[in-house]
Length: 232
Image 1 (cartoon, rainbow, N blue to C red):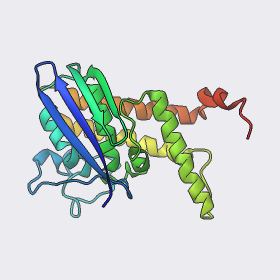
Image 2 (spheres, rainbow, N blue to C red; image 1 turned 135 degrees about the vertical axis):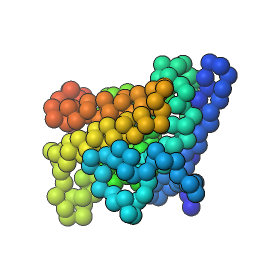
Image 3 (cartoon, rainbow, N blue to C red; image 1 turned 120 degrees about the horizontal axis):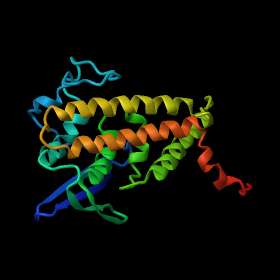
């Protein structure tokens, strides 16, 4: 099976180093999880289950996102969101480096894990996660998200379907993502009560999803000027 490997390395100011490899199936864009025989109690589906979660407790005893971020939550529960980190992200094609607060690096790694973990609400982001851009700005996120969605609509049209060129469905999807982020913040708070690095990272993702929702509602007017002089 062909895979995509993304390796995050966090180095704190006390000399600690945390290496977190992510493996993604190149064909499906799904996270390849090693899994554990015994899942921590905070990952149970019923623990702060998201209001829009469509999963049943009988078939899914554990939240797929929580299971896959448990290692991050466990390691960073003793860090504050403002703790300075040296963060390196290594992929097959290139290496990224940034000195930033812990929450910035965590927001970046959580974004790709949450999109590929198998949560039905987050699944529409899976194709974008396959082309992960660490430390992306809000404008980069807006452009990447809408571009990927419109590419999906091209394939819908190619198969004879009706494409959503108004981005209405994308807007609704990001509304649900905001509810997932709220649920994950509440869930993480049950296990990382003393420090706030991981929870604040989810809050950053929440803010980005809100920003994207507003940009869609405004019909992406802020970007229209980029294409005014382009003729095809």
